Length: 370
Ligand SMILES: [Zn+2]
View 1 (tube, rainbow, N blue to C red):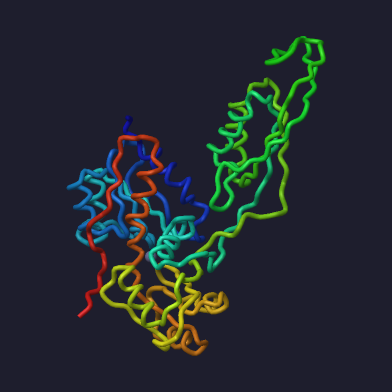
View 2 (cartoon, rainbow, N blue to C red):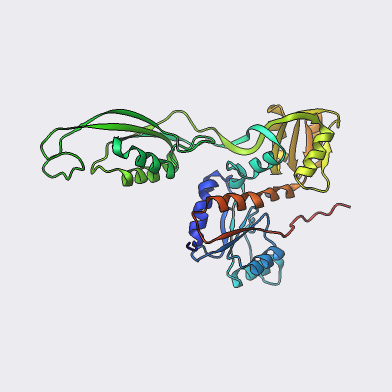
């Protein structure tokens, strides 16, 4: 087992939560240090503060993956007698890199919003606020039957044929290929100057346009022919939109009061705030991790009986009341579900590295409930 370097770890992470899913202006990515070093322990946290850095030092983690970017607004100075400066100093002196995955991890399938929806038992979810729709292409390649499997494998491995919750999707048709090698050719099948007729298959896959070049490269590497015949088609249909928040249904309807108690338990919070009639029946639930003030209209339009989101302002709560939308505000800290979510995903997806993904045990919730 090899110890990966930081870049390999982040490449693996970004297959799941790519940077292009982030909202514009969101300062995601590497914040502190370098990824050009071997890393055998990664600490996963919601926030980076002094205590979290101490935890990383104690646990020997060379990299912290955080949800909230530690440098959210540009720094004007790095004075080490102020909290942020001293935090940066400690990270650099301890050779700990910090990588932030913020709104891209909110949007990613299986990311923060899906984790929250799962925790609340919301089924048949769809996206609440669409933010990203990938352009698609179709790649069709002609391959001798003997190499069909290898081509499909190469396609799937490179990320082609990933449609919604399915991967390795492809379609194969059998037919006949004809070609005549010239004197200069070095053919895999056949001889120069002689017409060759061979059983070939056409393998088709749908690919995100942004991943097209990588997929073609992987396909060509797995193909036995010197000159590979393949087509790339632009598609009018777009991928199912990805975005912020999720909306779906509960298996068993309950009153708002019962749902609040359930949410409190499932999201592991000591208290939450409620807007609406406690006896209202809740079937459809919208959830959006973090600050969801901006999206009450979307939740109402989606037909949600309750909207679960954090950091609700007084006046927005009044607006929600006025449009008849029930609200549960369990606080911003419920995004801590990402800690175990990232640990589980990365531990499962890592290609047999000698690298541990550790959930931070530091509680970064600033509020106490009295
Ligand atoms: Zn947040």
